Length: 223
Image (cartoon, rainbow, N blue to C red):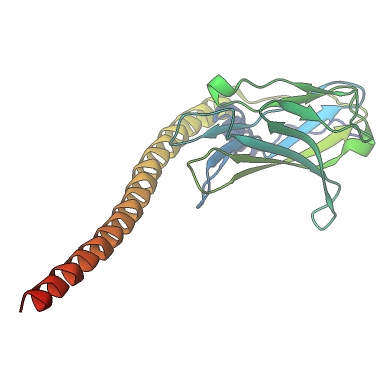
């Protein structure tokens, strides 16, 4: 893929670019954990590419229970191949084409599970998926990054006004996302607490029922 020079892009497009850059990527919100990744990454052939993936969990990370999977998919309908895992420690797959080129760039204490791939080639283009699970959270989080490799990049003229607009919109979006994450955590914890209380109530009900049967048996014997 070769990127050549082009005229100054419209203001709206620059605003969207500024929004993506300044808001820190794309947050996948759903029933699972909230994962933040850049949706599109464009890198020059032969350079290094950091695949940034951070997550937000309602619970503190425990290395013994925490799990991570990085997978590669050449196309949307192609088979996924795992090449990095975390099971008490970081594990790199010994299979090609990533063996010897992947480096751990994350920090679990900061909810960061990023990796870096060195000497990027055109054959590395595709979709990279970051799967995260942090028990007692029961739902797995997912972030998807599309990597595009170019052989030449020509500088483009950027609009200062558009970047400012992107910064403002990005800031508002960040505040909105943070609010949604807080509300989601509270709801998730409340739901799991309610399920635990219901289970406890059922067990107590069974115990009370058995006790009442014993009392009735004693009464009948006394008569």
